[in-house]
Image (cartoon, rainbow, N blue to C red; front, top):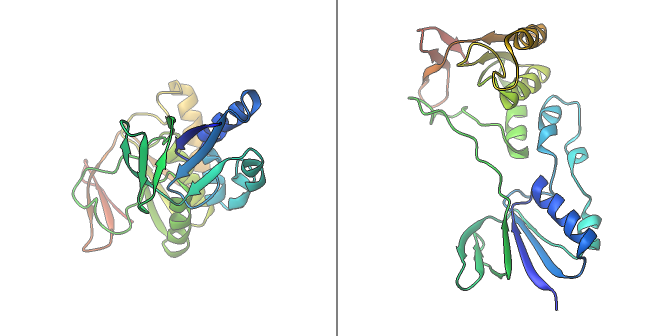
Length: 231
C-alpha cells in the first residue's frame, strides 16, 4: 500500500520533488500537493516576462495537468493549509478539509516583506511575488502612469522592467549605493544601472522610503532626504 505523502506548497520545489520521486520511487507514495494559488505550478522567474507582456501566463506552467495525473498526484490548489497536527498526522485546510499523511514536506517558499512605514496600508501598495500580483500590477500599469518600485534587487528590477514595458512611468528607489549589490561589483552595477535607465526607468540610489502619502489611495512616496515622488 502506498504511503500518503503530502506536499504543502504548489511551486517549483514541489514540482521538482514529484519529478524526482516519480523517477526513483513511482508507486511507493500516494502524493498530494496543496497550494493556495488557484492554478498549476509555474516558473516564478518568468513572472516579469508575463507582466511585460512578453510571455502568456499559461506558458510559464512547469508541467501540464496530464503530467501530474499520469503520476497519480492529487492536486489541491486554491486551498490554503491552516493547521498541522503532527501527533495525529493530519493537516487542516481553509476549506475545513482534513488530510492525513505519513510524510509531510513543507515547500511554501518565502513571503515578501511589506514596507514598515506610515502609509504602507494605503490602497495601491503592492508586493511582487506570484501570478495574482502580476494580474494586479498589470491592471495598475494600464490605469496609472506613475509607479514607484522600492528595492533594487532582482525582484525589484524585474518588477520595474515589467511595469515599464506595460506602459507605466517607473521610478526605482534603492537603499544601497548600487543595484544588486550582493551579486555585482561597482563597475558591473554601474553598467546595469545604465541599461535599466535606457529602458526609461529612473533609478534613485542611496535613498529609502520614509512614508507614503494619500487619504485612502497612495498618491506619493516621500524619501528620507525629503523628496516626494508622485505615484
